[in-house]
Length: 307
Image (cartoon, rainbow, N blue to C red; front, side, top):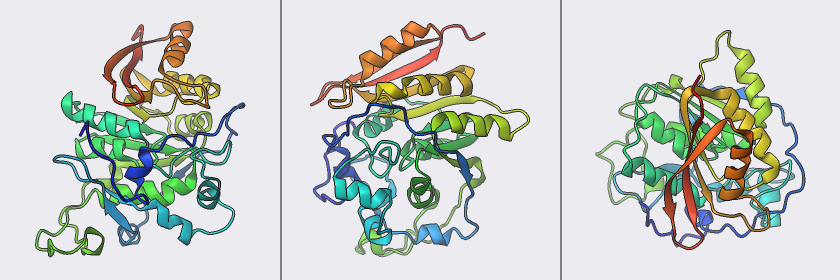
């Protein structure tokens, strides 16, 4: 998994993950986009029937995902899909925060889960900045007791995350013709896992915090927060720090994957670690360094004092 090669299909989200040169410079905080919760549709076939493909390059793990390039045809006009494709930009300030592509470090974190045998059973998990939701899906398959998915853009949740979670919660009929292309096979679920464990949210981080903290009489904080490539912009560090502070349980931990530095944006691992150290609330520990191409890191973040 660590050495998964990019697909040769330039339209696939996996190939997009290996193109990180289109980062738009930032100079201000993200707009305070209101947060909302997205309900799971009663008719799951509506999600199952979305165009999906299987991500290559994984051993013992197959992910079915929405082929996001086709969203451009389904959602023409002035929206995040058309703007993203027309401007060749992976990020558009205050409009789109990258949820249409699967970022490279997501695969690093998935590989780490396997190698380190990360346990999800009986944990409450947040996939922060979830995009396609692969991190949360892995926790779901690993027996987490509750999984929340959050992304800045509501369209990403509705059109990508929800569909991916449903697609990966079912088993394909083994009697399907193995010679049929993956996209043509009939998806007949044998086992639908407990989808009620999953909740879906969109909106800016501080607004998301307000929503979940006010929506329940007693909000149970997360045992594990999973996040990938969310520290690209130093302007967002304060909100991210506050999110961890407000939502992480006292004995919980954050697993964060990031590139060493994001050229053109200014963020990166060392700058974020310095930010964390200056606030003296959390401690960071480097769990893994991937020194292939642009150096990448997996970091654990925990409270300095669990009390």
